[in-house]
Image 1 (tube, rainbow, N blue to C red):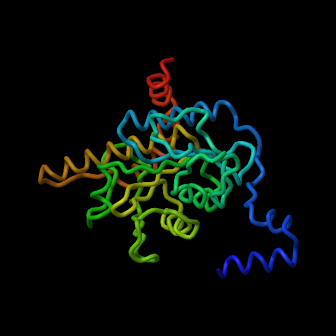
Image 2: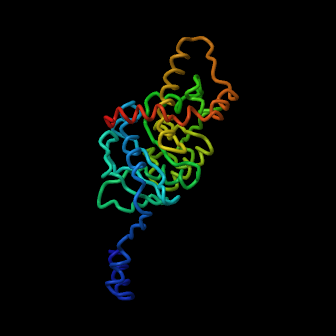
Amino acid sequence: MATRRIFLKASLLFGATAVSALSVQQSPASAGALDSQLIEDLVAAYRVLAQHDVLDGFGHVSVRHNKSENRFVMSRSLAPELVTAGDLIEFDLDGSAVNARSRALYSERFIHAEIYRARSDIKAIVHAHTPSLIPYGVSSVPLRPVYHMASFIGDGVPVFDIRKIFGITDMLVSDSAKGHSLAQALGGKTCALMRGHGVVVVGASIPIAVGRSIYLDMNAQIQTQAMALGGKVTYLDPQEARKVMDAGENRGYERAWELWKAKVTGR
């Protein structure tokens, strides 16, 4: 009843037409068509990560729009392996869709929006629930680089615990405030674990974000196996890791990306 009284009062003050216009949430304007190569690579990224079991029926990938720093593109809410170019949607940094057309949206799109807002150097983001990584977000054992392909880990991976600020939640990063807190936990790192949830991985391109996601998974599996042997584990020295990064981080995964993409596209 209270809502109805407010609506009727507004109708008397402004007129029914004005109230009707106010009640409709306006979509943000589009930045324009995304570069065709980015569309192709983004669709491939979903499928590559599903093929490598980094993503399953859940998780998502995004790319910053090539025509606006304040826009990004990701799929509608859909299992990664099923994503096509027609499923892609443009968003602003508030997580508002430009062209949703009544399609369901990922509730955790705010992960992407707030990291793009915080990090101008980031052009692509992956959020996954990779099983090998979960133990390192819920235990006191830190995830560390054990071989050169995971040198981007550097001196450690931060862990985002949503309880510290928001208390007991459904653990989803489903609004801007939670996305902002995750972006703060990530800081200037390449990735961050999410306690009892998964991981977020970032990069300066789609191939880099995908490559890091794949090799982060491999590194976690290898580290777990090495620790299970019971002896001393020799991790990469931070200076060693820096040398690999300074050399171009495996040339931006360009050779691996060409192979991965060919396997999912058939060409």
